[in-house]
Amino acid sequence: MWNINALSHTLGIQYPVIQGPFGGGLSSIQLLKTVSDAGGLGSYGAHILSPDKLHTLVHQVRQTTQHPFAINLWVSDHDEGGLGMQQEDFERYLQLFRPFYEALNITPPTYVSQYTERFEEQVEALIEAAPPVFSFVFGIPHQDILESCRRKGITTIGTATTLDEALALDHAGVDAIVATGFEAGGHRVSFMKEAEDSLHGTMALVPQIVDRVKAPVIAAGGIADPRGVKAAFSLGAQGVQIGTAFLACDESGTDAFHREALFSDAVHHTVLSRAFTGRLARFIPNFFVNNIEESPHLPLPFPMQSFFTGPIKHASSQQSNPGYTSHYAGQGAPLIKHRKALDLFNEIIEQMQSFSR
Ligand SMILES: Cc1cc2nc3c(=O)[nH]c(=O)nc-3n(C[C@H](O)[C@H](O)[C@H](O)COP(=O)(O)O)c2cc1C
Image (cartoon, rainbow, N blue to C red; front, side, top):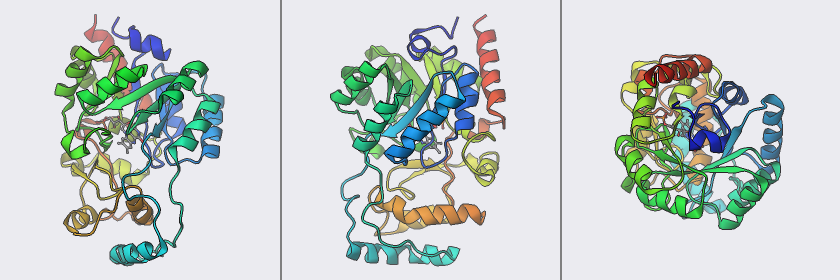
């Protein structure tokens, strides 16, 4: 049977189909529950949560499902120059963003010295709360952290955008590795070279990693229907992680405006840009993205850029203004057809069962 392998065994799930985590507030417990209860692995992207909120989240999810689930964090929480903004820097940067705030008629943010969560504190709370699975991107946690996870029975999933990253994750002893191609929606989570220098397609990346690592490999990027899942297994993956197609489902944490965009012709063209966070990500291009791409002064390093774009993302979504929205979407988006997570999940399982008959 296609679904019974080292990955499904390690994760304790029936079907090795993972609902990818969504950071930036787009995850939902309902989506996670739908997928975990159906026999897959639901995930929650928690990198913007404080340690206290993380603790509460794990508790809430445990109350909601009896099945395994994953909580996801970003190991590297800032890029060079992205922390420690001083008041005078703030005033200067504010001027660069002022035209966007004015166009959307929003009150500009006020100065704060701390504008991001720190990974070290988050992971301490996570280990204490002990979710069944801890998945992570943008790096490899320190050996002490991985060792604590092993002691607590927390299964770890690392994420690679290149073969070298996968080898490093394997060497560190993670339990499974996501191999994510540049087709994927959301951020390019590279941690050894610049994201722009780590752009490998899923089709090429997955088999190279499968050939060289001990850990089971999960394919991600551009998989949005059963054909993609079948292809991933043909390349040697033992599981898939699907993001954009689950993001488009009603249960996800995104809003109706974003979900509709995922079903529109706008997804025929997506771009990689640092416009919203300062880190490279794939989304539907628009006026704001083009402006930042042409700016000689922006984007600022992560997470400073996120601090200034937060109000823009919020207001554009409230005003349904497509010129400024951060509508993340992968290249597989034109393949999406389901609005209910269970319909998407069941179609994949049914087709995979019939392929393997
Ligand atoms: C809006 C959005 C946010 C995402 N945030 C995260 C994240 O915080 N952590 C993570 O590991 N992956 C994140 N991802 C990646 C997905 O979990 C998944 O690996 C990816 O979407 C798979 O490619 P696909 O979009 O082509 O299906 C995000 C993807 C999207 C679309």
